Length: 87
Image (cartoon, rainbow, N blue to C red; front, side, top):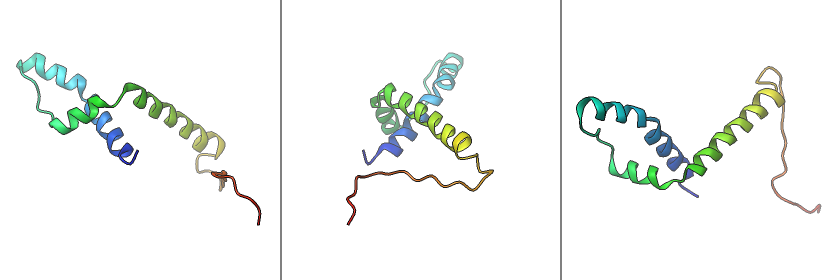
């Protein structure tokens, strides 16, 4: 879980250039260099993770722009993250 941000970045980086790599191969008949670590990490991350991150972005947009006013108003959003007993 500690490497979620890095893995998400590498997944996007690798898969966003798939079309470019395909065109490059078609034009020059050779593959474009991709760092082995990037390729291995990006290929090991399931597509479900990427889809979940896209859904999260939709909720982030909904919260920020439609519920919180998109920065047009001073809004404060409080959310309980743990159960606490009153002392």
